Image 1 (spheres, rainbow, N blue to C red):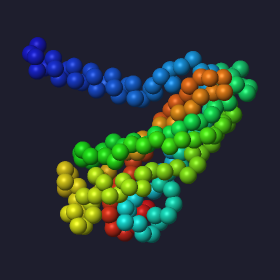
Image 2 (cartoon, helix red, strand yellow):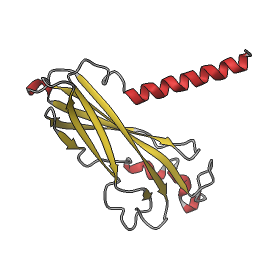
Image 3 (cartoon, rainbow, N blue to C red):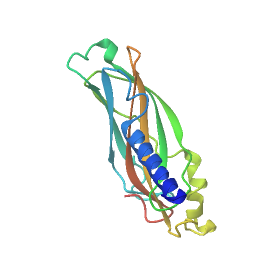
Length: 190
């Protein structure tokens, strides 16, 4: 086997391991907590017009968080979950390379074992993200196209990670992702 072939196999193995680790969650999911978080998203929009317009005054997605007991005896006060924060990050799905900066927002919501809640006032982009890469390039004065893809829109998945802790002190975590297209002055959001 040549060095190049071995290097490609090693890169493939690392990519598979990284994907598996992201899919399974991190230290929070692997904890001995009797409660697991289940975070799901329902996209309410598929396109965000960064210039605003029709349909852009709502939320892009609803993110729901459930506290699921891992066994039947996992009820009680100490197995309630206090959600502490969520992080939003992005992955390009169109071949582009630049993404907005990820950010973290704090929460203070308690969910009973077996209960659920939606993230209140869920934010998809920080306020200044529209004037920064990759979105700045979509504005007419900057050419109106992504410099890598040549398209007038940016396609990416939005990743939402939710962090919390049971009242008994066990960390819990889960994540969801959904696709969104971003454009500038493209007829509104839908």
